[in-house]
Structures are given as C-alpha cells and as structure tokens.
Amino acid sequence: QVQLQESGPGLVKPSETLSLTCTVSGGSISNYYWSWIRQSPEKGLEWIGHIHYTGSTNYNPSLKSRVTISVDTSKNQFSLKLTSVIVADTAVYYCARRLGVGGGYYMDVWGKGTTVTVSS
Amino acid sequence: DIQMTQSPSSLSASVGDRVTITCRASQTISSYLNWYQQKPGKAPELLIYAASSLQSGVPSRFSGSGSGTDFTLTISSLQPEDFTTYYCQQSYSTPRTFGQGTKVEIK
Image 1 (spheres, rainbow over the protein chains, first blue to last red):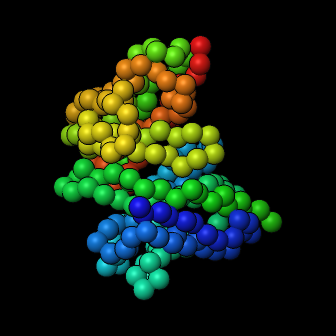
Image 2 (cartoon, rainbow over the protein chains, first blue to last red):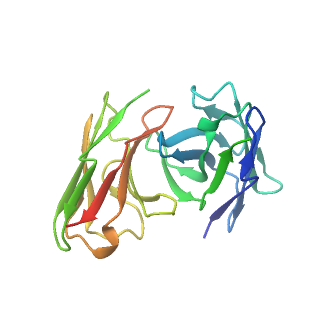
C-alpha cells in the first residue's frame, strides 16, 4: 500500500524559500503523476502543481513564478520549492498521487500534511 | 480558472438521514468531478471520482451524480463517522480547483 510522507521546516522567514520533500513508500514513484496541494483557512484547498515521474510539470498560474516541483526517482521522492514566501503562504502542505486517464484525474493517496508557518 | 461552488456551506442532520450536497462549476467540466471527505486534522480522502465512480473501500452509502456544471454527493444514511467536511474538485482543466467545503454537523 503506497504511503506518502511530507518533510521539511515548519517555520520559514518572509522572503526566504520554502522547501518540502514527499517520500513515497510501499510503491514506486515511476509511472505516476505527483501533486502538491496546500490548505489554509483563508484560501481553502489550493492546488499548487504536479509532476510526472519523467519530470514534466504543470503549475498553478497564481504561483508559477515562485514554484518549482522536482522528482528524484532514485530516492522515490519529489519536492516542492516556493520562493519569496509571504505570510499568506502559511498553510498545511499536502503531497498526493494523481491517478486517472483522459481528464478523469483524481488524487487517491495523500500524505498526512505538514504545517508551514511563514513568520519572522 | 474554473470556480467550484458548493451548497450548502453547512448543514445539520441526524444519524440515518439522507443528505445531499451540491457542487456547481462555473463552466462545463463534463464528468471530471471528484469528491473528498476531510476529518479534522487529517488529509482529504477520496470518496468519488469521475462524478459517480466509488473509490475502492468507500461505503456504498456514498454516491455521486451529475455532469456538465451540476453535481451532487449523496449520503443515503448518515453514520456517526460521516459528520465532517466534504469538498468537490474539478479535474477538467488546470489549475485544479476545489469547492469551499460543506460541513455536515449533528442536529
């Protein structure tokens, strides 16, 4: 059974870079797309972007200038970097696996989430 | 971006009640609509994908319907563990977008 676990600093200073890693266990990262989603009381659930195991990416235009998602198949991990963070980037960050074909995509496995606070 | 609007934002119901939650998309999304359940302090869990397909392991009291712009999630007989928050999400186009959530509370 595939499991995902987010890891990274829980506190980031404004203007710095938020870096998180999602480790995939119980299965291979290959042959799937992998997503990052965040949740805050102000914005609710917000899709950040996804990456294919081959490295192709798709980002939310609202964050595209600050976001990079990368994959390391040798470590069965994928990562999120968000630059120039502001207080509004404070949220619970989730990683998830994307399944489906032909538009009928869905996120079937989620990590437990990690809280990131942006504060000086 | 496609806007997803859920109604109601909250509802009160009793164990055994039949409950329906509605999700409306700002443009047609065919059947590319998913439903998630989220319990406090936990990650969302997939209930329904492609508007009406039940995710493996999800109780059959949950069902989904709709296409185009209007969708519904129905819980046929509310159980104590169902009192929590539900979200819809469209996968028709990027950026993927979610509804604001519907909280099901005990009456």
